[in-house]
Length: 163
Image (tube, rainbow, N blue to C red; front, side, top):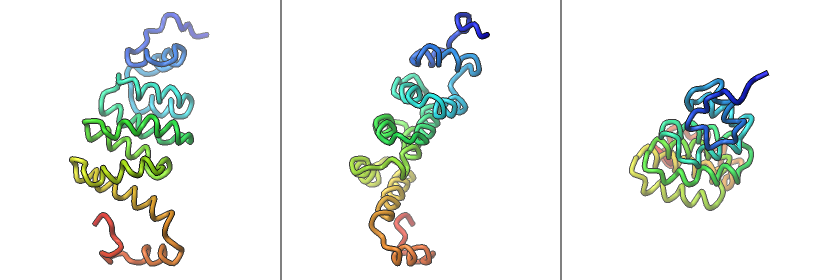
């Protein structure tokens, strides 16, 4: 039997439920990709709390946002990741975009992405936003025939949005 009272809790995990924090601290001594994957599988609400807490470094926040996107609860994902789209670090904004991707986009998020596709500081993030918005529109607006034409237009510039 594990004695939970003698385990030193990692500082960043103190914002989590005590039992979850101790479980994580037994295995990992700092936040890492494996921690975020574990939380995304077993304790998705705790991952959301960890992301919102502000205790993670920017590179940790990026991975956490990507794993948050694996959750099936789109409302929780949007509540957690949309604020990260205005983060000062580009790597965090990229992680939020990857987490949101096509699965968790609604009209409000789409408007934010359209704005980011025009005004974000980095060209690569603007390009990612355009791609995500285009894929959302693509699924909604295009008929089967238009999809067929798009798939077969490999080098036709009229069909490429992010050339």
